[in-house]
Structure formats: structure tokens, C-alpha cells
Length: 312
Image 1: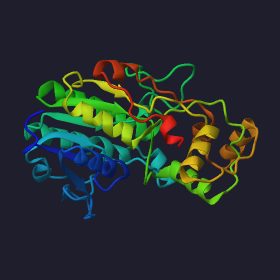
Image 2: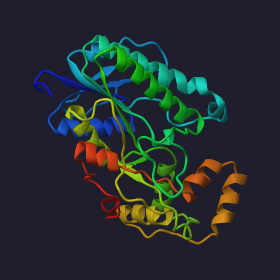
Image 3: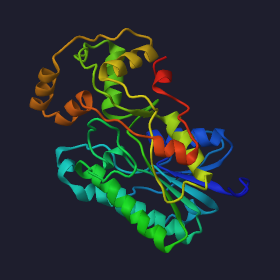
Image 4: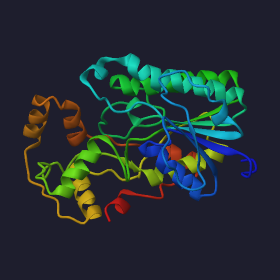
């Protein structure tokens, strides 16, 4: 990469779970980091911030893109906050597709060299059967969120064809780390409070996760690597866990004993589906494995953080 003294990394979603973690990690590695935010939020010393507002609205990114060599795009809509959102593809398209492509167009016009897009392993599908998702699998997105990520990937590829902007796509599974949101945060809370969890018998499924540390390390490599441009990379910590093992690892991390009790898998799935939590039932009982061999081979990279590290 060019001289770091006057070229910046721009990380969108700087007040989000992943954006904050990436900004802190890359700043600690010596990069000049600028983050964009919807509203003013304190940042780590040395990190510059620009307030851009709601990404569902048109944004002029010119100030944010000044002297930027690489954009790392984490901002977007991830969590469905109402039943209507589940069916409303337009909600996801405005933020995850239209805003992403508008940013990439402006980045190309501003002379940005590389654009790293944080997509999702759910572009590949919702579950695996016998082998992990690969970078070159035919996409099978499940739901409007995953579809919006795939649409953004395709739009970015078109921009790359007619501009000098280099696109790198990363597809992580569920991301773990301090400040995580969604179902994983709920599970952490339940483990910490000693609530009874009916996952004692869910010990045969295999689900890959990725820690913020692992993802940040791969982003760091992709900023500069001459084999990254135009590629899609799957990423994980490199060791799948069963639901029971995941709960145990969380308990070990927190320093508590998990209150696990056995419930037959079929009964657990039925109970969750009856309660309208079919997606959660799939996450807790099915496999979702990630094949990172292409990532490791092309970039000469291995995950610095493994599931064994999480289980401390």
C-alpha cells in the first residue's frame, strides 16, 4: 500500500458492533482510520469520525472519502425489528444495496483504490449438509437480508468492471465479540444470569463462527494483498462448535457454570417453531460450516483466533 502517512482507511458503521472493533484493531496496527457514523459517538484516540446520517437517505461521501485509499464497508441493516421487515425487501435494498453502490460509485470517482465489502455467509444459504460453504458455490440466499447482500455483491462487481475500483468481498458467519447484538447477545445474557438452557443434547451440530479478531486480521491482509482484488473470501475461526459447546465456551469466558439441561432436539425445534422462532430453531440445531481453504491458500493466511481461543 502507499505511504500510510497521508492515506486513510474509511470504515463505515463506526458506531456499530463490527465497525467499532475493526476501527480499534486497525488503528492499533498503525493505520490512519476514519469512521463514518449516523450520529456523534466518542471514538478511540487517533480515530477520525465523520457524521453522515442515515444510510437509507442520499449521502454526499466527499468529506469521508478525502485521501482514502481503502473503504471497509460494514454499515448496513442486519437485524429485523418487526414482522413487517421480514417481508419488506425494499427496507434492506435501500440500505444494503442502494447505499452500498452509491458509496462505491463515489469512492471510484474519488480515486479510492480498494473497497472491502463485509457481506454474509448467508448469501450461500441457511444451512450446510456434509460440507462447508465455499466461495464459488452457487448463491442460495435465505430471506431479504441475505438477498440484499448478494445484490450488493453483484452491483459492486459491475462497478469494478467499468472503474479502477478493486472490490474484495468477505462472507463471515455469525460474528462474535464484545458488544455483539441479536440472538448471540441474548444467549450470552442467559448464560451470565444462570438461566436454564435446554441445549444439553444439542451436541452433534456443527456451526462455524468468526471472532472480531479473526475478521479484523483478514481485513488487514486484504487491504494490501495483491491476490485479494476481485475475490470473494469465506472466513471463520476455523473450528465449528455444537450449540452445547458454544454455550460451554461462553460460560468459560464469563467464568460461570452453564445451566444446561437436555431436551430432545425434535421437541426443542417444535417448541421454537410453535413460538414463531423457526429461524432460531435452525440456528440452534442445524449445521452451518464454512470452507476457508481458498481464503487461506490464496492469501497465505490462517485464522489467528480459533474456537479454542474462545473456549478459554
